[in-house]
Image (cartoon, rainbow, N blue to C red; front, top):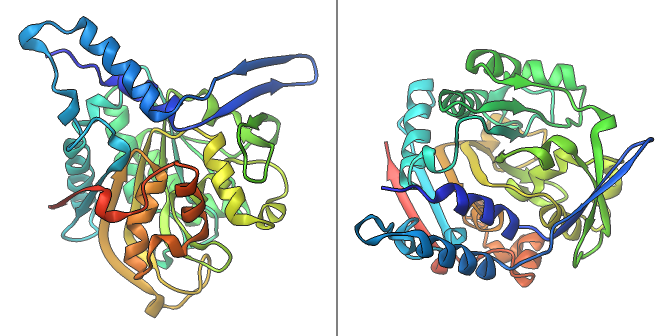
Length: 343
């Protein structure tokens, strides 16, 4: 059977964002412009191209590739595990990829893959402030086994060396064979956003823009300013400039982050969630062990589903309501293709 998924993923990446990217340095300025196309236009063009080269019995039933329709943005895969051991996490991630059509549909030999976890605070994994490092290690190892080059990074609130070490991410990278790097302030590039809600431009970390495949790996937790922080909010960690400034009109800015930065896959960490006093405080009573992953290709839809873990309706999270108004993703769970598995 011919695998057309790489073509699908590349088109999907363009469809999820509307952006003009300007690369600039002290010596030169190169401009790359991507014309915004809607997801429907991209999928329509992809299907025409794909079916044009398919032959009879080897045709792939693309309309059923991710469930009910070819629009995978409405598909959410929810994997429940037995415990939080590395063995259990590996089974969970594998089941998630298999349910989405297999990891080989996403990760190809020679790809430059970026994994963007939440490493924002100088906290232990058990505090549910940062992404589970064993989960990041598992995903990185699976990608590397398929011949990809994997890099892990974040722009923490606290000291990067302390955050990387105490969160367990340095060890996770070492165990998996992935590279882990500290953010280099010289590598931010200006991105002009089309149809912004608040921000005309953003400084985005160059490696996010140059990657062949980006995996957004947030942890789900309470947030005093954003209500909840999940996949959409996690992109703040690859944006330059003064972080505090973005908290003015925060919800509109979160939407603009996601208009500017292309992401291919979300693997949301709900192994432990912080239900109150987030993003970097709380007591053991605020931590709930869900032993769950939520996977999908659209951060709006993944976040909207995950809001239910906090007994919250998606429209109560302002940036989700705004994103839905901008037609960036589905927030009505009754219209999603929700696939649940237990391993």
